[in-house]
Every structure is written in structure tokens, then in C-alpha cells.
Length: 265
Length: 166
Image (cartoon, rainbow over all chains, first blue to last red):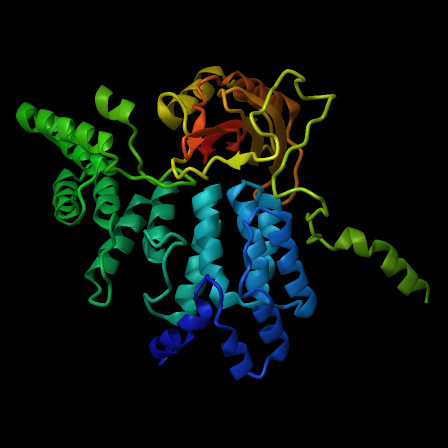
């Protein structure tokens, strides 16, 4: 039942502009009016005009969670963790299920707050009792993969591996563009090179990136296979130069490998 | 009655979730010139149109990439022995169209996202190293060189830098 409820809730839960009619349907005219007032905001998130439009929406409806989230974005991107947290906590307070996953992802992505991110994502998992907890703000990772990344960053590699293996074995789950790479690197870090290789190959099949070739080269070097080592290393350098690598406009992706490291190793 | 008055007197102390929002005429994160701390000879190409580091979709741009910044701090930052020295420190500044930097501003928090003042031995070192970074790449948008805001966030644990963001 919860599974179906989740899909019904998706139009409300998405992190973009909500569908104002949902509020009208629920006879919440205050939120409806606030929502309509920001249906079209032709200003950049950082500007005073943008912030003021959402301040006015909050004057109409002080519990309009989306306005808090919208206001928080520029603070997040400018690294102002104090103001961001104040605003996003308000959004989560007034509409927990819609924004707690987003808050968890941002805690991880922008502030490397691994424990905080895990707490928020696990809250959603408990509520929905399923894997349908949503994706990162940019859509690159499922939130359960993000949770595994956080455990890996906290050096609980076994837990990270278990989470990812369970998720990938779930028939409801569609593997993401960088998922196999993250699992492969985690196996590599616990020196399980057989499983690391297995997932590096799987990653190549869906989306080859410089970092993936780099780890293949590292394993070949460990195995004393100079031919494969050089081939994969050169491939990694070329992929990097072609910008086929882990990249994000705002922050450094997890397990990112820089060109200098690829060249040196 | 006496209790009510006493209670109202303490309310600001008890409310741990006060808004950090400030009413200003500026955009979020803008840094105005302050004669007491900023260089007079730090020239901007267009002071009315300072962009953000992510506006050209190339992220942080530094000679040798971010790993070179991490290396600078690894070589130059001396960990400070102190207790209660955990949290985040953000240094925000402007990179002008020539790749020069100034207008450094600092905020910091503890692990609960609460405002926190760090030991000055930590913050002074971070500021000094940050001001010494000279590999910032001038960014362009539509072939025009721009001034832009950049920040670095330092995750501090027991007086040591454990991560640098973004």
C-alpha cells in the first residue's frame, strides 16, 4: 500500500515547483495562494528580488514549505551552512516527506555531513518501508546509494558494500550511471580485487569514465600485468581529457580521481 | 505574573533556532568592500555583475585542479591541538577577472550547524593559506572574463583539516 501511496505523492514530493492545484484539491487555500504567487519567478535564486518573492509567499502562508526550500538554495550553493540549515529545516518541519531526502542529500553533497545525511535518508526508508525514497538533487544517485557512499566515507566499507549489493539485487531498482563504479571502488578499498574488477567491468558496459579505467589500471598493476596497466592508464587519461569523468558544477563527486593522480600512479 | 515576566525575559536565550537571515539590499552571499580589511587596489572588471563560481558550469577552476589546493593546505597547515575544535569553516572571497583574490570573509559552525567561533590559530592559518593561493583560473562566460565568488569550506576535526569543499 505504501508503495502506491508513494507514487500518488510524487507530484507533491518533487523538489521543483509544486503543482498548486494539489493544495486547492486539499482545500488548503492559503498554500494554494502562496503557491500561485511564485508560479513564475523570473529572477536568479541569489537575487534580492527572488528572495523577496518567496518572503511574500510566506507572508501569505507561513507554512508553505516550498518557499523555504526555494529560499535556501542560494545559501546552499554559496556555502552558507548556517542560513541554509535554518531554511531547509523549516521546509522539512512543514513538509517532512517532501524535503527530508533532499536535505539529507545536500548535507552530504555540500557539507560532507555523512551522519546527518544517513539519518535523513533512513528516516524516509523507515516511513516508506521500500527502496522508493527518491534520488539526489541532480538525479545522479539514488538516495540509498548516497547512504552507502556516506557509510563508505565514514569508513564502514562493509556496510556500504552490503547496502549496494542488496540494492542492486532488488528487481525494482534500475542501476544508475555511476553505481557500479562506487561499489567497485569500495571493494578495491577492502582489497577485494575480484569483486572490484567485476563491477569495474559492469561500469564500463553502461558508462565508461576515466576513474573506472584508472582503477582497472591499478588492479592490473597489482597483478603485474603491465600491458593492461598501460592500456587502461592511457585510456583513463584520454577519457579525462574528453571530460568523460566524474564531475559536478558545485562540488567534488565522491571517489573522484584527478588527472594528476592518474598520471602519477 | 512574576513567573511570566521572568519567562519572557529568558525566551531569546532558550530559542536555539533563531533566524540567521539578514535584510539587505544585496544578493545572497555578496561581499561589499570594507576599507578596514580589503585591498584598495583589488580591481574588479564589473563590480555590478559578480558571478558565482558555478555559473559557467565548470565548477572550481584552479591550476592543477582541486587536488592542488588540498596539497597546499596539507603542506602549510599545522594542526592545532585543541578540544572542542570540530565543525566547518567557510572562507568566501572574490576571484577577479585576472585571477586575483580578495574580500575574504569567514563563517563557522559546530557539528549541529550552530554558529561557533574557532580557535584563531586555526582560522588565521586557513585565511593566510587561502590568501596565498595563486592558481585561480579567470573564468569566462560568453567569451567575457568575469569576476566571481568562490568559497572553500574546511571540515575540522580535533584541530585538523579532514576535508576541503566544494
